[in-house]
Length: 70
Picture 1 (spheres, helix red, strand yellow):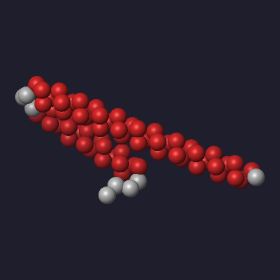
Picture 2 (cartoon, rainbow, N blue to C red):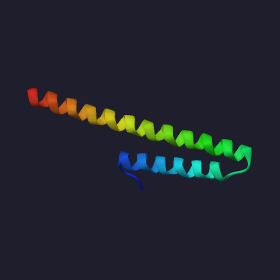
Picture 3 (cartoon, rainbow, N blue to C red):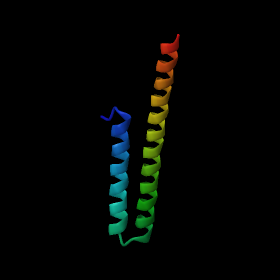
Picture 4 (cartoon, one colour):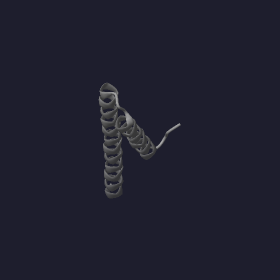
């Protein structure tokens, strides 16, 4: 089971890569389009996880900074 965000991000990019490989290997235009669309969704999910991870880290840094000043 995936726990850390970075593990989730790697997983998403791996799945995106698999979708791209299937799309490139396919001769069926509909399957090709579906696989490229799935690749795009996996990439967007990875980017969403990365943004969330960045915001969490930023929030933790702000908290440390504020608590250090009080």
